Image (tube, rainbow over all chains, first blue to last red; front, side):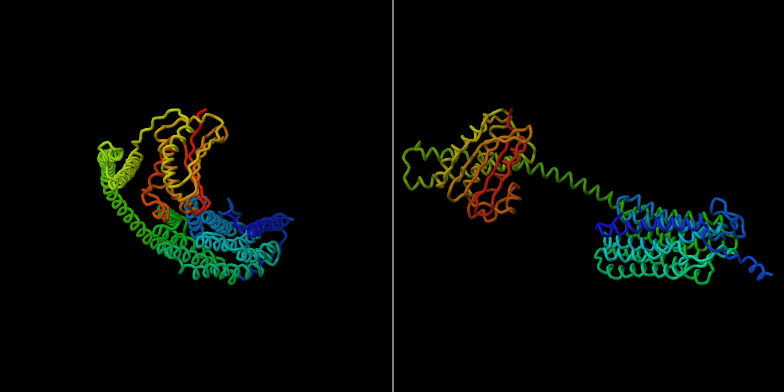
Length: 50
Length: 554
């Protein structure tokens, strides 16, 4: 399931490799480091409701 | 620090949770089943085809997206939300890119050019690079476990999606009108219509949700997949796209099964809408299936009828063929006997067995003798063809010296050569005795035909017959090469030279009496005895070489 010409083949191989790298980085960033900001808007919601 | 969770019960088995609206089960699972069904059936029909594999990739990306969506609804863990959301941002344009590649391959039966591939990868590249950054996803709001989408997720993905859809539409408008096969044209139209409807439904649901922050809307986007499945199944059933007729019906049944099955988990207030949608789908697909089955039955009846007619025609043809062979055989035998008498009496008259013949009559008698000889040879050729074709040619194999037999044939033909003013020479390069195991009479006849053929097509110069041997691995063969300085021939003529009734272009100019059977008969007989005959020529006017080969008896 790859294109015939070599240039395109290398292009897609590089893209897939980069994608896997990026997915790993995202996983490490969010799931392991939990590196993201959490806005606790629970009180606001409760206030609006009351 | 303890991780903070969103305010609902954690999901069990990743996607069962009180936070998941029941419509999700309906929209997502039906779509997943539909995608999996089409992909599996198309893949099973032809696992090696690139289109089938791209279909599997396209469906897998979509199925992963849909499963991640259910997880997003169910989970109360902010980290899982962030990761699953980011994956969705990546998967969505990737699905569109593969959809484009799939359609391109379906249309052109090949991958796009390097430039288009570069455009695809360049479009996806920023999404991949900025995936773990705040340009894709910002902070997470705890109340609904939702994240604020950055510009990459909110704008760039939709730009990429629309770009791929535009490429598909452009390709469709540019190339579908050029398709000449009517059925393929209609199947392609259905395919592209289904694909674009799915992609646009999918995108519009997500775009609206992205801007309104009401993510319940995005779930309707997934209804595009059953629609796509419907169009795919329709084009398969109706136009036999992908050459999987039964698969089309199977896709319809699987989608119906999933639609009806998911009713079990739908909330009561949604039930009427869902049942209505299912009813429409059932009506249309049911009609299609009935039409398809009726057509199949009609075709089967036609085929059965045709088989009976063909059987009768076949039996009649066999009978006619047998009659033809018998006719040729009888007719040839009947012709041969009177011809032999004519020839015999003509030569007796010429030899003076019936007294002195006037000089004027001698010329006429010589013509009678020549013509009858020629006719006997022609009849013999027809008889041989008749025997070869009916498989009645008998071969009496024995060991004999091929060099000696070749010399004898040359002696017979020397007179003919002399009459034409040609030099007929013989040379032997043999080390061994040159014993072969074959039918002596048939071999002589083949040699006679080959040498005679060379003499006929040589106006001046010589015909040289050489006997030699060569080794191919352990097998040794003995060859007889007949080289002449005659008319020669082009590659085109050589290609069809040994076919029945085949004569060289302008052959009548050199040899008007040929039947086009001599070489055919010679080749058939020699090949039947394990040998081979081939010819070689450097071109017209440059002479030719015919070579006969038989295995050497060790």
